[in-house]
Length: 404
Image 1 (cartoon, helix red, strand yellow):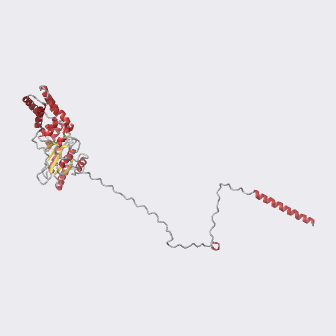
Image 2 (tube, rainbow, N blue to C red):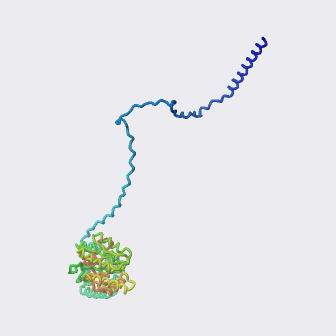
Image 3 (tube, rainbow, N blue to C red):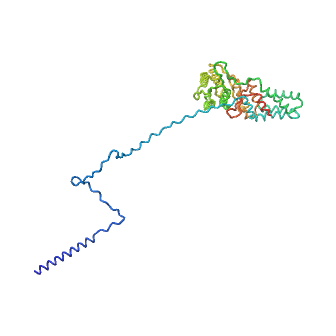
């Protein structure tokens, strides 16, 4: 019996020891706590329960229509951008040219170069105490250098010799008056110098402008339109120079400045057809004057003659040509006279326009070209400005050459 009790005690002690070892071992295997920087992972929410396990429904209080706030309407889609059509270029402002009366007098200072060479040169030589042969030769050379021409120069020298001999003593005022009278006689005072722009019928006056390219022909045609508008005439322009690039554009620009319409055609088109249409439009509009700018090619006289002759014949189907103006560059001197001869053979020149007279010492070209063609200088160009084309006035021209 004692042995049995002892065995039970030993068994209980053994069981207790084994339990302690197991507990101790489990405590040693616990994981260390997570470092503070490690984020805490939360478990996902439990799956919703259904049936008997479902949570009871919590009823919310009902709201009236007034209490319900509707969601804001989505922002309206942006409107398509409004396409603004580019504005048409504004029509050029129509200019009012100054009246042409006395324009040459106002521009007389532009003749300074011609004045120094011709007028003042002659006065200086004539003022010498003794007018010997050498002095007269110098006077003759001065006139020839100024492009007065051989025959007019000889006539002037002979007249001056005679009058100086009769005059005897020569004061500066007497010499100036003497030279003025003789130069005025050479320039001529009995020519009809007004540009003829009246046809005498119900049709407009027709003016054809001819000349070599490079003389300022198209520019002169535009300036002439300003002269006519300044004198109260309505004008239609015909751009019949179809062989030079931009000639029609240039002429149209001049016309727009004074409200004159330009009739034009395709580049390289038939000049006679454009001239015909220009006169036709001038009649339809009741214009006073039709100005026709023609081509200025001089490579063959035959081609030029055929072309200008055709233009003239076609235009005359509407009525007679009232004026044919030849534009010459005053700075070309004798070359200008050669051009004048060629054009005079082609068409009947009725008047001359001398351009660039302010840039030459050869003011005597006025005398020479009139003698060569037997027609008057009607207009002179004295600058680059739009109103620097002046009706030619012999007295004002001679006074400008001699000076005060």
